[in-house]
Length: 163
Image (tube, rainbow, N blue to C red; front, side):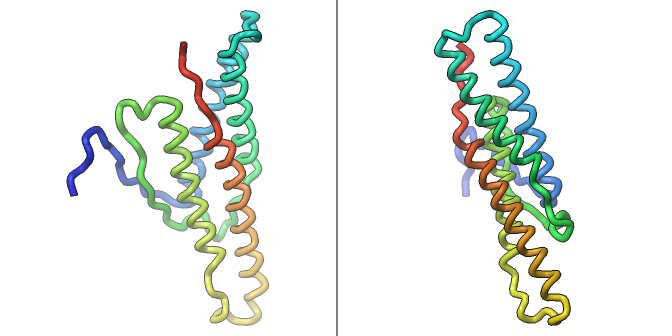
């Protein structure tokens, strides 16, 4: 199938832990950029401008997403599971919006792997191990739920233009 003009979605393969760490790192970088921008507007007494409101709102969503991701505890049993997705590598992909989209794709892939793990059939597991396996499944579901909360904030972020 021919590739669409301008499309540069490259395959991304990693582990649950690797994809999660990459996404969390990108969200942290975006958060830092928007908080710095907001603080710069504040230090120049520009709180009354519409741009300040846009930057402030975007930074709040990102801070919420970042704080949620910081609290996610991935179960040890899932850390090395494979994750596959694509990442936009176009030159424009360095914009905040594209970077957030790439982080979102990583978090979705991580969440999918966690949910697939949590939905595994335990009926064939030895009865004496089922309680431990149930706990692993619950921990994976809990981590997936927290990632979804962060995704909701990340996907709600409207990045303001520069001018």
